[in-house]
Image (tube, rainbow, N blue to C red; front, side, top):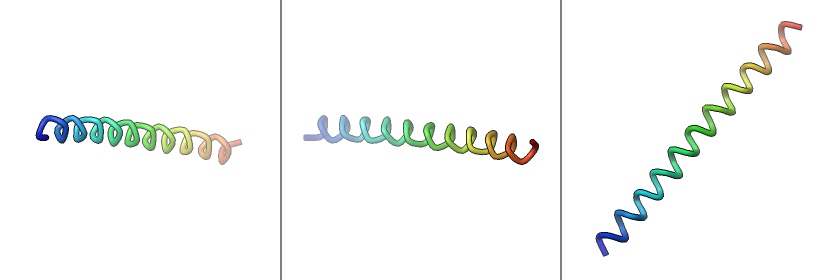
Length: 40
């Protein structure tokens, strides 16, 4: 029981990390695009 729980937590943390990285990347691209559009 304890093993499967820790495994689930590991998967959960991996997903959270991926989501955080994805959000940061989207924000980075969005700021670049908006900056580019504002300076045309």
